[in-house]
Each structure stands twice: as structure tokens, then as C-alpha cells.
Length: 222
Ligand code: IYR
Image 1 (tube, protein in one colour):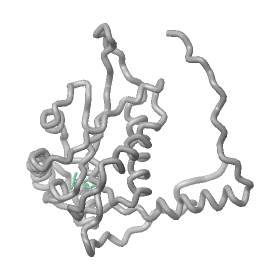
Image 2: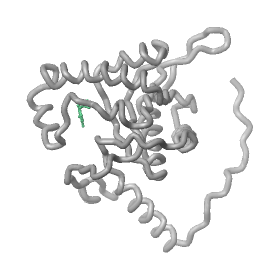
Image 3: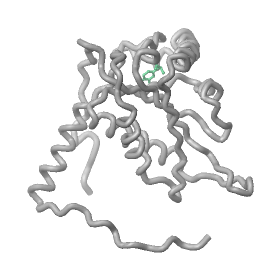
Image 4: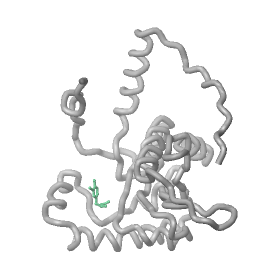
């Protein structure tokens, strides 16, 4: 494969140091307002909002620029119902027997359980699939590199974009998620990594009073 032609880097915005610090802080202030929400309103959100957020997620860096992700966006009431039923079946097993006592204890403060009504209420379910390989025009299989890292970055960027658009989000991970390949007719080269639920929060929704680690706890300058 020949190398791509190289073009000049599109200019980054110029900021003096003070403005740069203010910009970084403004972004932090904005992102820290994101909270995982488990009760959604059924109020509609224009499809174009989601499309722009998906385009933002699709700018994520990825191994060899292979962009090993696929976003299945579900708005159909029938599909949401099927996904809810299948997810709740897995979750009943998870909460009833699969999860270790230690895992259940770690989750207890968040108050989650096997009931997932948000899967039917929220206007959008975005199932993020990772792609282990792709087939080229001749049907030859090409392995993808750094798939979990690439898809994780894209999910983070998608959550940030949805939040910036004023939407509430929830990352939901029923396990295992094989049922999503079946319901959404996705190939075996793909694996569902998470369901990102997006919409407006239900009126009066509450969230657990939790905090994030301090800078000292999460970072050290060497
Ligand atoms: N997938 C389950 C359990 C769950 C696990 C973790 I770790 C969480 O942070 C939250 C939930 C569920 O969605 O209830």
C-alpha cells in the first residue's frame, strides 16, 4: 500500500496562555456536569443532533486509522422493546446469580437492578459495536489493530458530544451482549461493547451524590 499524500496541518486556534487555561477550565467545567442518568423522558430529540454527535465520535483516532466501530442507532419502539426484554433477561441472571457478592456490593451504592425501563423510554439507543476485522473488495480478511482502545476513545468522544448538545446519557452494558448482533443483524466480526442511551432526563430525576477523584489522586507530573 502506498503512503497517503501529506497536506499541511489545518491551523489550530491561537490562544495566549491565559486564554488557553481559561479554555481548558471551561471545557472541564462543562464535562464535569455530565452525570449518568437512569431515568429518561420520552421527549423527542432531532435525529440531526445524534448524527452530528456520531460524526464527532467518528473523528476519534484509531489503530492504523481503521475506524473499527459501528454505531447502531435504535429509534423503533419494537426494537427497543426486544432489546429491553433480552437485556433484562441477562440482567436477571447477573443480579440473581452471575455477579459475585463483591461485585454486587460494589454496585449497591448506585442502586441499579435488573429493571431497565430506560431502554424503551429514551428516544435513542446507540449500540456501539467494535469490528475485529473487515473484508476488502476481494473478500480478504484484514485484522484491525488496537480495537478496544480505538472504540473506547470513540465512545468517550460520543458521550462528550452528546453531553455538549445538552443530552443526558447512560452507558449500559448488559452482559453478554450477543443478543444485539441477532436483533440488529450485525455480522460475527462485530461485538457489541456498550449501549449508549441518550435523550432528555426525566423530570425531577435524581442522581447519586458521588464525587470524582482529585487531580493528585489521578495524576502525577514527572
Ligand atoms: N450491567 C449491569 C450491572 C452494572 C455493572 C456496573 I460495573 C455498573 O457500573 C453498573 C451496572 C446493569 O446495567 O445493571
